Length: 294
Image 1 (tube, rainbow, N blue to C red):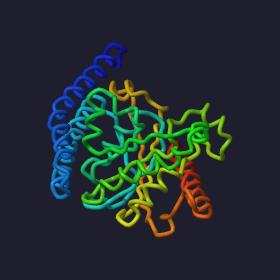
Image 2: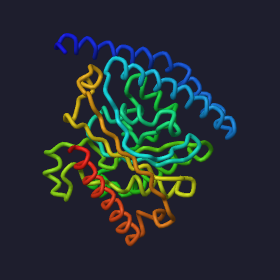
Image 3: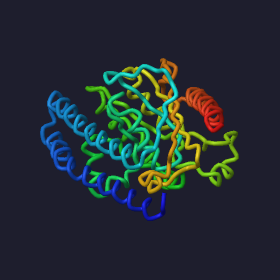
Image 4: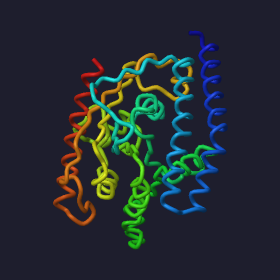
């Protein structure tokens, strides 16, 4: 592929994604505003189903765009049975913005619409930020240790945000997604952490623990997803232009039992046990990545 052809394909793919987003923006955000103005549970439930259906169509068109123009081969390695009528918590490793597009390609119409934990600042992204808001994506605000020392009244505020976000998912099936590493993997970041992972950053268990404490009784399973780019971590532009020929995705369906639901903030024994469990998942994921790279 010539350099000019690559950039033309990437630009065309991006243009189609932008036009697709603008097409769905008005009805999705409009219904989101109605949800706020008419806070009746059964009305909100029906509107949520309609908004999620529109969002599923939005993602389906984006996926078609990626398959036709980008022509990346996304291969899923598992024999799991998934359902659109179940509640899932999905965790995955994080390497690139492409991860989100890949997850949407793999799981669209296979599980309930994916809702990502997002940094609060992302609500200001033009058009897409309001779309995420209307779709009830959980926007998180993290407080540094230094700020909490200066303003102790902020302690627990991020947990309250998580609780309120997850309470919205009690009335219709949903898949809540969390990148436990909290940021994209790089070798430099990996080296500074001095952790026993070759292909991963250390997982942050708090967000997952708080979400499970709110939704634990509703959730049917944990989806443990491992993403691998055999030809190297791609940029968003690489993916759009067709420079990512192969993506591998491994999926495990794990049970969520009562031992994973507790008071992560105040119960030290539970917190240590939960972090140990997440670290074990991450060690298994690190080994899985090594196998998939060979």
